Image (tube, rainbow, N blue to C red):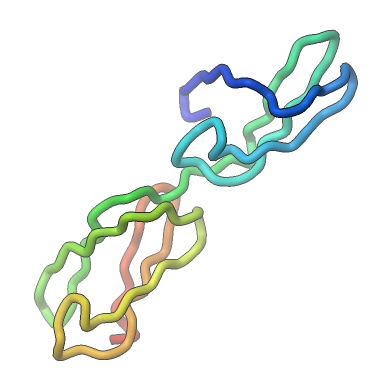
Length: 114
């Protein structure tokens, strides 16, 4: 996944010919989605095609009222989801919310709500 290889302990037995879903983030920090673990002849393989990079803690650049700000984001945000915070966190003259959207592993800011 993302050029990374990981070994990890399973929390349950997978019988040959069966599969089990597991959260990508449990094995690959910073990734979101579900991977499928399959067992065939005692060998377990992981299908990670539905895993996507999440947006991790980072500094979010925001341009508000002609001034550039950096807003610290301390939590993980799933790909395609949004994160919002008050515009007044950046400048007390503004009301409403800045909305950040996770795109790949990058947060993009939108200040239309300010």
